[in-house]
Image (cartoon, rainbow, N blue to C red; front, side):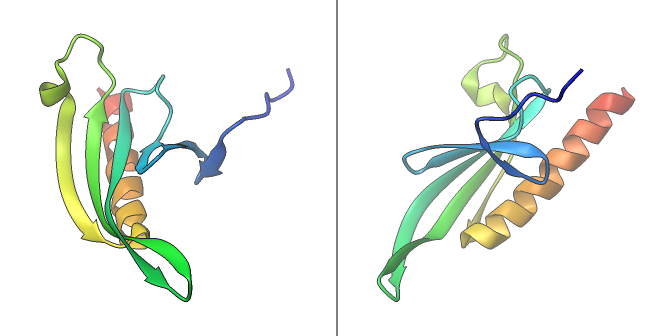
Length: 100
């Protein structure tokens, strides 16, 4: 069976989907995804980059209220640090979910 082409930008094998200043990282079919929200931006060499980014590890369980779906949250300076934390949180959460 041929592997289906993804329509999404991928990061470390998981999809990245952006809508405005909100980015979702992970597969909605998995038990957890990451939500990144760009809180502020700054301009460097005529390019706008993310300055403050909030990170949330979310459960994809449809029976949970939005408030209870938030497993972890943090705020980082810059997209690089935010993505680094996001990838670590998501990998750990999915590994624990597979083991249980």
